[in-house]
Length: 81
Image 1 (cartoon, one colour):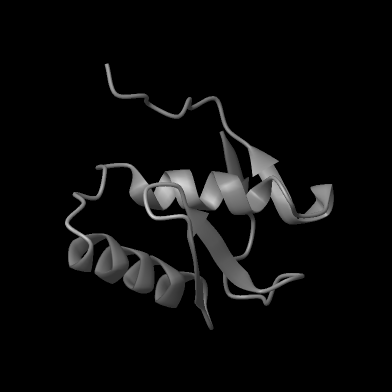
Image 2 (tube, rainbow, N blue to C red):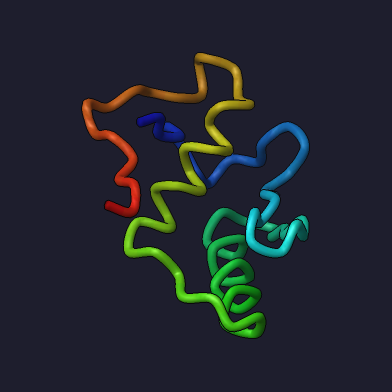
């Protein structure tokens, strides 16, 4: 799993992610703002947020960042078993 080294810095392209369940692009001015907006979007649309939502979002954003902005952990993204 990938982690962002410093979530307080702006990132290229901004803090945004596409929500698979609704195909909507959600953004925020900060990482925590993005998380809040995603949670609100999921709730409004009748979806439960997975327990590891923050980790999933962080990993997806880290995939598009330069290597000097990320670090890899030994953790795996949990799937619904």
